[in-house]
Amino acid sequence: MSDKTIYETLGIKHVINARGNQTLLGGSLLPEKVQIDMEEASLHFVEMQELLNKSGDYIANILGTESAYITSGCAAAITLSTAACMAGTDENKIGKLPDTTNMKNEILIQNLQRYRFDRCFTLAGGKLVEFGNSYKTTKEDLQNSIGDKTAAIAYVLNTDITGNMLSLNDCVKIGRKHNIPVITDSASQIYPLDYFKNNAQTPDLACFGAKYFGAPHSSGIVAGKKDLIEAVKSQGFIAYHHDGGLAYGRAMKLDRQEIVGVVSALTAWFSLNHEDRLLSYDKKIETIQSYINGINGVKSEVLQVKRFYGSTLKVNIEPKIIGKTAKQIAKELDEGNPRIWVYAESDPKNLSIDAKKLLTDAETIAINVHTLNESEEEILGERLKQILS
Image 1 (spheres, rainbow, N blue to C red):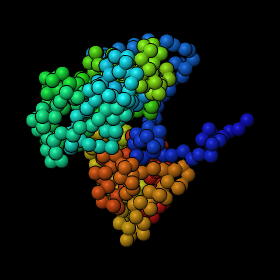
Image 2 (cartoon, one colour):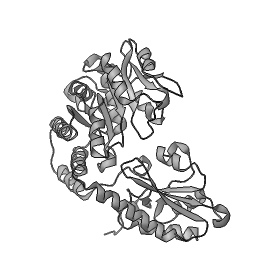
Image 3 (cartoon, helix red, strand yellow):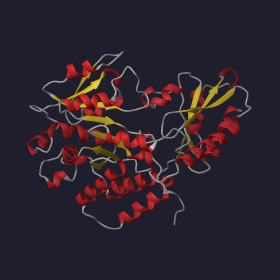
Image 4 (cartoon, rainbow, N blue to C red):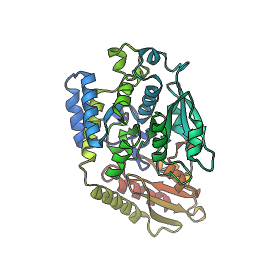
């Protein structure tokens, strides 16, 4: 009998993840209770439509929305929401997607909010139409952009919202005046809890990545108005069998275990002592700092960020003293055993918005600790100390 782990059997070194909930690294760590509930769910078959409907009702009750639906990630939530706004519950239209000929298919988006993942609003056949310019967006810009082909308004909800952007509330108000739904990408906007609820309740369809609150990587939530959630369901993988409408979301399948994992993780998120959670991150950061404090050419500082994990450790490097750049240090961390991933100057496409802000200085390493397992902060601190010394 082999004592190897499954990763060792495959010849893979596991990664200590000091970046965060990145798709590149598998997204999330499952709390023990979530693992237990998922294991229990795996033992028996269940009628999937009933599971999706009742889990949606359960989540809607927590978030205070009319309805909700679990999806295979936030990108799927956005895609299915867009499909719902274009095809509704019309089986003929549903079966044609992504061909949106003779349908309302324009999704309005602020010029200031164009971003890498707005691609998700087009996957089911939507066409993005910009309003406003690269400096400012006004209510008139949105009003003047609404036309006969407008199906929805896209809104990216994150910590980069500025006064030059049209607010979500303004978009919703104008949208409802013209009977046009607003779809938000609210992926990781899940804390504080009242903020999470408000983000779910304000738009017509709010999309979240469930990996951020401890659910499986490949899971998400769309919450909002009951009629629109019913239209979202009509695009889903179960609808392909039940409704006969050849639903576009057939490929976005979920396991029963994943659905249960979302329910379990969301329940835990709303019962967690978040002050203790954030304090535990601070302690991990302090541990890492204790290994590198006093090293000549290295300075560290804790930065407060408007994200659910609260803080990030920023380590500034002086290459002339250390003899290495931040990028070289990150490479050494990655080449060790176990591998360690931190943020450093690299391909901008693979950086989060917060990391891009932190890494304006080419000789900076950014470390997020909320995705570290127990004691991994000590391994990270020791390895950093060795490399920097």
